[in-house]
Length: 129
Image (cartoon, helix red, strand yellow):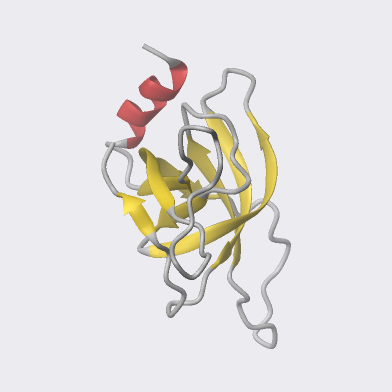
């Protein structure tokens, strides 16, 4: 049993962690990205896991400054960091702006993410593991 698997078992019973899906860019047998007819990249489900919002990088909130969709997520992941992945967390798709880092035991990865607009369609090719 990996460290990430142990973390997932614990997170399943902790209300602070939310169910999360990580979608990676779909590739064919040669490693080339698969696109649809309009040239948009397609995505495959890479992992079902848990994520937690990390507020440590957010210094202050003001009433004048509107929320711009940026967040820092700590994701329990058995996979390595993928900057091209899309994360479905809390019913909202997020694109990865920056891979901040991970822990030394390869159990969690911290991402700086940006919420995608609700009208932005993410073409999911395969939604099962």
